[in-house]
Image (cartoon, rainbow, N blue to C red; front, side, top):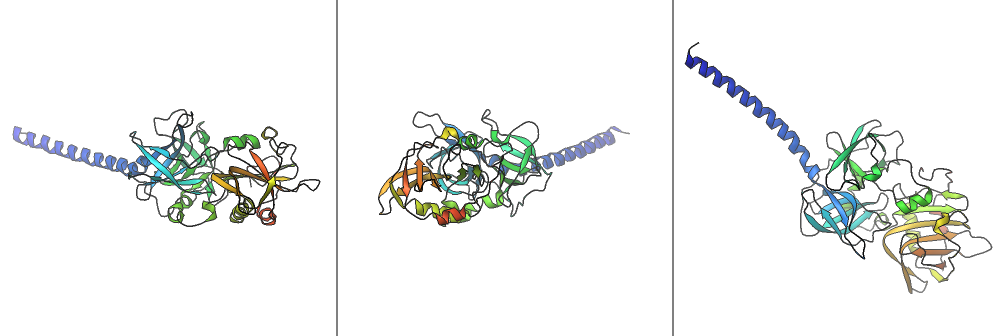
Length: 377
């Protein structure tokens, strides 16, 4: 072979190798870039420092819509719809305000002030994944707040009430409760849902959960985009509910599971009764330390709202504001029905006799005893 032919052969082989390398590189780049939009769209939600309390990481969030909206979950035991801070993965900070909450799932819609970020492209329908499907949970743990990480999970045989939720079990020792508001995807990056929260104080009162938090289906989470300007009670009602009696817990704990089955009816009845209050009443027979139901007389429905609610007498006089309220009925010895309330989680500030009729409320609340496990409907 002469030098000229040898040189041409070497050049030809080099070109082929170069073209092959470029093709593989383009394919890899394409695969990486196709995953970037939803990955970059995951942000941190922080509650700013206030009243001597340090700033707190509340949840992960997902940028959607036109880039100025964020889906997330908030701890409504401690949050009162004040301003929040959004921190992106390149450490940019933006202010955000509360827009709406789907109280059935606690999925919350936030609005960014004057900025639009890369959005997560959601499919037309995610559907609830099948039992045994492998998923990934993306977010930040309370211990590691600087690096977006993920842990694997598997869709479990125990299904949270469909179609709002599905359930997973963790693979590899991680716990979903350590990843507040984690974004759940399949292995290809398709967004399936948002990991809900366990409410610590009420969970301790009830004895605590022994499962992973349910996953809010993304199809229902994004309904907030279209429903936020409409007056659905699921956007106005309580986000947590629990039913106590002297026999234990009735119904099931809402917030991470759907609130009582007739949710809208319950919400309307509650707001009506909060404007039909009579004279102040004693509350010193109730104490959080006994779990409320240890020596409870009658039945007590406890609900928590995202924002303070007004309490009024039958003649319209404002008598207080409540972050949470308890409605108690069926008390012994002819004692009146009463409302108890507080501005700090489960700390009782006072109470009033209820003048209104509780029939609609009682009918909307499930009265099924669930011995041993109040977390399962």
